[in-house]
Length: 335
Image (cartoon, rainbow, N blue to C red; front, side, top):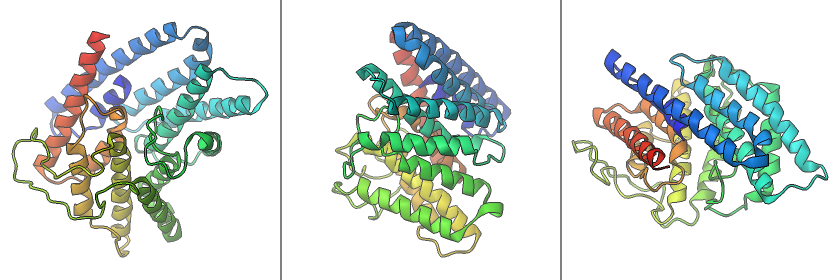
């Protein structure tokens, strides 16, 4: 979690030298804490340590490279190396070798973590290509995880990383790649397929919600108190906190798709201002002290930070990042 917070601190767009130095120092401190936490964890895993040390270290290196001020080609290098480990892990699982429950859990963590980082690291690489190793490993990982994600189940609270079936994150990777290289690779048919995928995932995810995800959103941008609850309206699916993170990913994906449609003067399926307000409404409802998936909110916050136009919105994002940092530091001190 400290690694992702370090990444988030570096990602936040600082507008002056003092703020930039502050976030850089914050990120470096969190990264040191992450390395110390990895060492403690490996010491406690016993015989599992040799099989988990390499992929976890590679993930940590990947996150470190994401925190650099400029996009780093090493992000893709680490992901490509991890992709080969994932291919080996999937092959091992299909053999006759029996895995203990703990080994099965660590295998799932590795596969979900790889999908997560491959999907959310696109923005931190200089013009990333679709590495055949990574693409194959993503396909294998998604297939290997099919049995643990039940269709029609909106709440995947047993998921250690993703919180939703892998398809959402594979689509997010494709959307991010298309958005970054839109001048070269924009394909209207591919765009419509991704939009249809995102809408289908959203429909399934929110099928059991009482609130209408497309209903009107009331936002009072004149409220100066950034810590006032419900500034952006009531929370959809309030009875299920596990859906908040996936909803943020869906909104952020639609923001990138809408931005692409506007660039090419295509008819937009969504209003950009409404999407940003919806994303901010969800961010306003984040509770770092209780939300299980707090550690993976950095990518949606990064997307929202690029498109939010109000000072109030920027202050809210900054305040929420600060809350995550304070909560993580407090817990780390207790441990």
